[in-house]
Length: 309
Image (cartoon, rainbow, N blue to C red):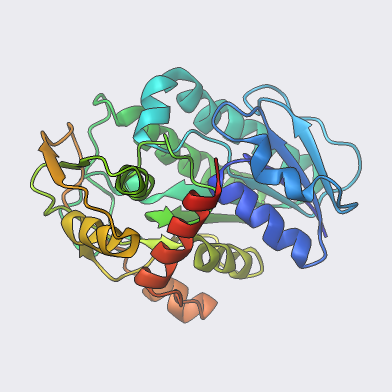
């Protein structure tokens, strides 16, 4: 197949590019590198099945030749990034999604949207099933990302209902693994970077808030299964094993052998207290479940950070 993936030089996008090329598909990676890194795809640049286009998908997208799939992964995704780039985040969720959907329609291609568990906001239901509508503050500092993705989902479903486009929506829960940026502000890279440097590890609140961490290799398997499924409604992809932020810190300190101490700071505005996916739909319809244990995934990620400048 010939596949376009927007945001393909980002953490998750680049891992998926490599997976797709490994499956023998022709992959066109499109990214303006606002938060993605050319280093993430450097190992693919010599492959005849891979090509890169430097382009902002919030502007019109034009691709020569046929496409079988359009995968829309472009967007700042960490709080540091989308609070630094609030307007580009809103644009890529709205204009970018519209452009990507329009391209899929013109090419007769299938479409997959990389959405997020952030559509659930600070949930009042735990775990979160796809039927939960969420508890989102639209004007808070996280609203630019949450609402951009909620709009992207609405636009995707409109194209499915009005134009009959075969669309898929993946709601991605906390994911970690190689090619995360050290400075992206998310929990795992923050904790690993601070731990390896022997610095105090910053924990917000009392560290009792919970997350469910899915290793990136498991996630991309889920994407691939979703691409070839008959599902058009959103699907949660994440690890249902819930752990506290404090527990993650302790595991990382143990793996790195660090002497770092924990430093507590005030909890950010609208930071979710719980985050855990109900993956019944993915289990039943995609026959997908995460396989990489948390400790093994963290060890792999620590090794990546040790060996990457």
